[in-house]
Image 1 (cartoon, rainbow, N blue to C red):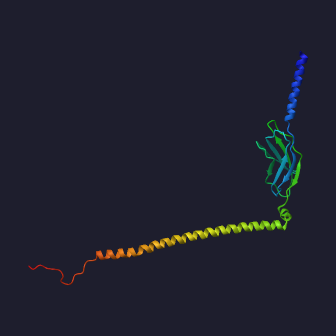
Image 2 (image 1 turned 135 degrees about the horizontal axis):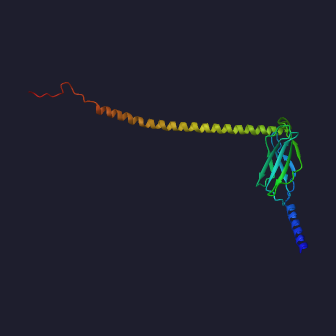
Image 3 (image 1 turned 180 degrees about the vertical axis):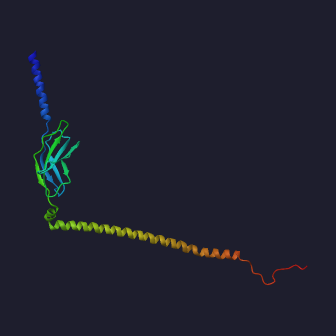
Length: 203
C-alpha cells in the first residue's frame, strides 16, 4: 500500500513537471532591425506557434554603457517595437523576451546595430529620390498657396457682392426719401397771402 501511494505521488510530480515544462516560453526568433534612422529604429521578431504569449519585453543598451532602457507591453499580439530618442552614429544592443502569465522567456540572441548619421543617410539616397522629395515638398507648397489664393478670392467676391447689394438698396431708397422730404416741406410751409389779404371788419 505504501509503495503504491509513493508511486502515485511520483507520477503526479512528473505530470506537474511536464506541464511546467510545456508552459516555458521559447526565446523570440529572427530579431531584426528595420526603418533605421539617425534617432529611431523598429525592432521586429517572431515567436514559436503555440507559445501562450501575452506581450513582450525589449531591453535597449548602448554599447559600453551600463544604463538600460526597458520597454514592456502586455495584452498585445504585436511583434514589433519602436525604439526612439536614439543617438546618431551609435551602437546599440537589443534583447527581446516573450511574456506570459507564468513569466518571461529567456532573452533572444543579442542584436547589435549602429544608427547612421543624417548626413550619411542623405548622401546614400539616390539623386532621383532627393529630387522626388524636393518635388513633393514643392507640390505641397504650391497646393497650399493655391488654397490660400482661392480662399482670399472667394472672400473678396463675397465682399464685393455684399457691397453691390447694399449700394442697390441705398440707391433704390434715395428717390423715395427725396419725395418724402419735398412732401413734408410743402405741408409744413405757410401759404403766401397777397398784401392786404387779411380781412378786417368795419367797426
